[in-house]
Image 1 (cartoon, one colour):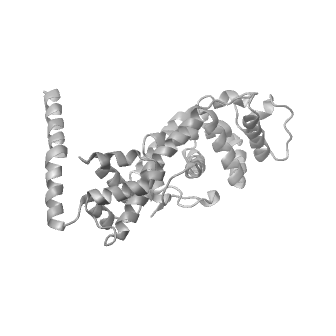
Image 2 (cartoon, rainbow, N blue to C red):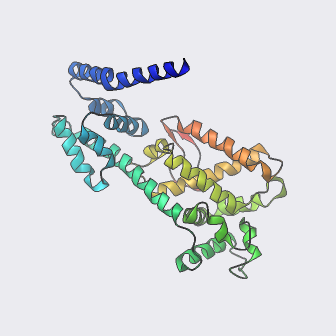
Image 3 (spheres, rainbow, N blue to C red):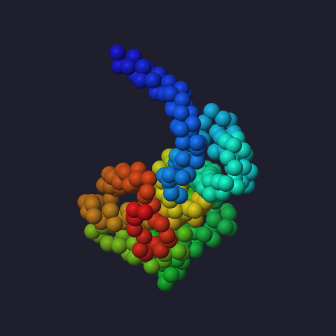
Length: 310
């Protein structure tokens, strides 16, 4: 019986999406004199609300041109908008703002897809101790976090001082590849004071945790938010057009600081509670990102980042 009801529900949803919704759109267009894309742009300010609706409208359109617009190269967006305006018989001279709004939102959509690919490429690239660039980044991370303490050797127990698990950090990067190192180094370079303070706090017995390992773990959390689409809300609200790696790294810095505060607030008995606290923190961020007006870090000044409601 449950299976029958599920199938029946799916059938009515399909019928609504394929038939009733399109019929409703036709009636509304005849009544208002404007297409769905026009109504979305005119009734929603720039940001996640507008871009989410435009993305959905294009994805479920019956026109192949509109569906394929979601996968065009960023360099082809302007021409794609011209083609859409022509298909919809919209005069760009009498509707100049419409083309600008559509272009900004479509750049966000295709830019997000490009960002996912870029981040995934870094995640899949393993740390290679034979690669001079990789080694240089790792040693630079040490210098940023331990500026007054020389590293006695590439393989050393000193790495534990900044939160790695053993004598050679390369083994800790296996899960997130170079992405984890890129994020940690970005944080240490661009908000050094906060990173050093967090590192010092992480060494205190009451709230002890492994700074570098947590950074790699938060990288995993940020990556999962990105590939799962939850970060669209944030990035569509903070990136005027194309979201890029810088936006992702700023988001990582925010998540690191928020998790640090959250860890202290939760007051775990020991590091064995890490997975519980991380899961709870993850759920909280997901709830916040369900608000279409939410931006996690509207500007980058990592020492005073905070959640804002635009």
